[in-house]
Image 1 (tube, rainbow, N blue to C red):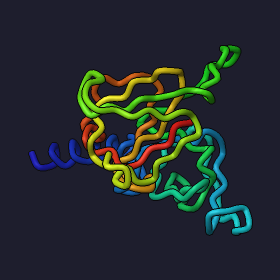
Image 2: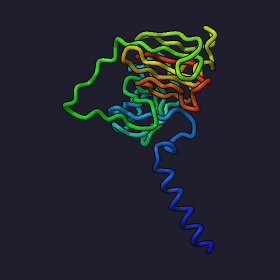
Image 3: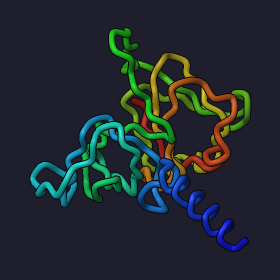
Length: 188
């Protein structure tokens, strides 16, 4: 009987390790590489290349600075350009020959209550808020309305640390990880 449990546990552990949610570091935000990522020793092209991660691979984002993030993936850990990262627990492959919407001139509104109720503020593409606490909005946002098509990275902690999600459409209630837990955001 013990051998049956041992085999079942081994199969379960193998399957669990193969899922993106268990990949690599135990901490960090789930993400995917949009293309082959060059890993560097520091945040910028002046730092040495230490390796690479294949495109469309599950990765964990450990922390970010303005344009660079430390990622952990199948072939190592290092700094890479934030523009090559797609945040979230699933890949967002774009089908070929399908027109892609221009999301660069959009706007999102962030509401205190569910279903777009209560106090709110709106931001247009290009805006970044590294610390919502400075404006009195830390851990207050519950829903997000996309008023003009765009996308945003929403993160639990200041300066894009910890768990982040990519939002591309209105959310009458944010996920349990972000509702009333939002501390930083970037509207693309």
